[in-house]
Image 1 (cartoon, rainbow, N blue to C red):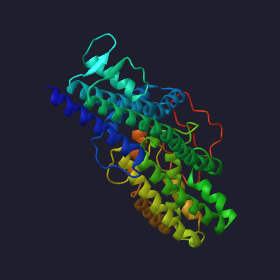
Image 2 (cartoon, rainbow, N blue to C red):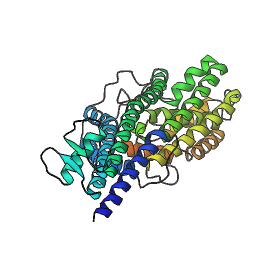
Image 3 (cartoon, helix red, strand yellow):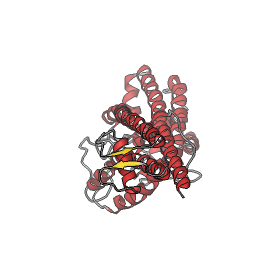
Length: 371
């Protein structure tokens, strides 16, 4: 019985340390689905998401959802600490509870108390291990406790630095194209700025999507961190990039000819990011073209293409080319929208930017688009 306790305790400690290493230190996505972090997120996010969906007030819903990411980090740290303390308590009990305790009592409760005071390096001295094996275990746990606190101190600032860097671009895009951003506004503004300005924007998008993909794969919890305002998000920014690059790619005219290669590269990176982040979140991806909740304004799309000097046959052909491009990312962004409860903007190349009031609507309806 006690031998089994030692084995179980050691396995629990190893599992927690491995999960901590993979979550905090390892700079790559872990493909293994059965992990403490994954289980914790699955157990907490589903009921939390269900509760948030029941709220009819958009402002309340967004505020509730904004608490999930940061609170889950704290919950995860607590779970790791409890796992390590519990594992070492089982090891102490399995080794025979050779401790000197002020009250003279011995048992699993006193072993858990010894483990907790050792892990947090309190040094109270009212419970002391007396055998050589348990002293060695206590020293090992104290060292792990110091290392755990150091990791926590380093982990949270790095996480928020990545979040802040991501949001700088989201705020810039909000000023540039409204909230939520629309591709028509971006192309309309940059068509007057010149090809060099559009090329610089596309290059900025390439850097941002690559950083988004890397940071979210390294720290998946970042996907749950909400922006400052309810009508902003990293997902709508990613969709705006994809929509704009798809419009440039399907337009056979000469206005975007100098930037078509940059747009194709930005589209490739952004669609790759959409697939990888969707895989991290485990969203349900449906095959084929998935229409967004607000739809696609085909009449405006055809009108936009026709106004670029195309006849209706060429406009219809370009629209079909656009649908093929959208099939590369629409299922993924729709799955992430459903998983994270983030509304996607309508695909409208002729929309005007929404006003920058950042006030969520209280009746649960999306903000209107101005054409």
